[in-house]
Image (cartoon, rainbow, N blue to C red; front, top):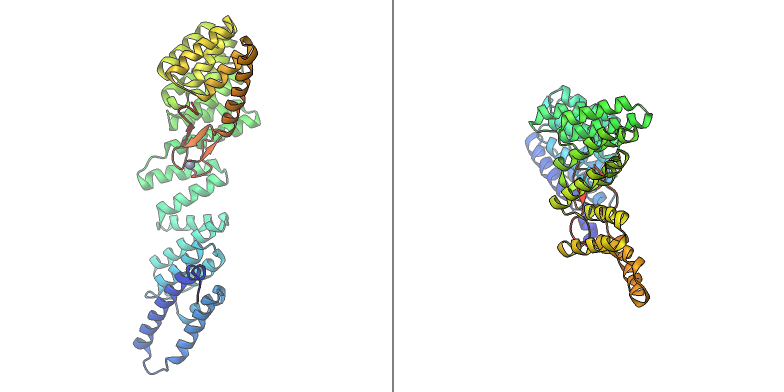
Length: 393
Ligand SMILES: [Zn+2]
């Protein structure tokens, strides 16, 4: 008896083999009713036998030999190749789709369809150079243009070829009537970071400007610009860039608050530090603002007033990070058993924070402790945000 695993493994092929059998039977009756049918059947069952013994490579040779590629059998060949690709047996998929393309009698449309599947095979195999050539060929022939451009965009992102990614995304905008401005802004940001790494600050700022030109709401462009200006000692320009984030995406305000306060500190503008934190506390009430404001109180007036402020804030919005900070600064003015109890509580909140991710993708749920602009899970741009609520922001 065939077990379930084996059945799942070969079932798609059996179905296709059945379809092949039907096609063969039909062709035989159409073309050559006088020739004996047992020769055909013996090869056909030989192929089936290979499938059942999981010798799919031999089965392919038998079935390809049995059924010539024509307009009426085209779909069967393409489907067989696609099944192999889906199962990860890309070499077999390539073999089948190449066999289809090699047929001179195919119509132009069918030839292009096969070329598209072959390009996807190479993409799946990680042979991006080959896939890229075929996708370009399809675009030139005005066939599968939107899909080919999408695959090319994926290739260029994986290869970090940001110039090519920008060109492709712009072509996709025209081909699909969809906006790719967010992605294009990120590609310019990637170029800006490369220039910054090389020490070419002017070029980095030019790329940031292009990113903002593509997407005015690009938080990443504001952050890169702020960091470049901050590192160059241009604290006013840096603070202007960081302050844009509040309007661009309030969920990401926590990403720039610390840098912004450092800029105001360099500018010796302590009033602006207090004023801006009071503003973000009132508008967002996020824990990063609470902790930074508490730290300002602690530095100016000591641990007790800072602790009182945090207690009030935690009453309005509970937070593990807030509790952890409260315990930390309360240890200084507690003694005896209260001090010991706080140490036990601190151990617990530290453990809770160590185990908790800080960021989460809104598209696929990927979680981590670092901020990614491009989700490692689902490859979406701008989908990762700081986690909100008691365990997060
Ligand atoms: Zn994701």
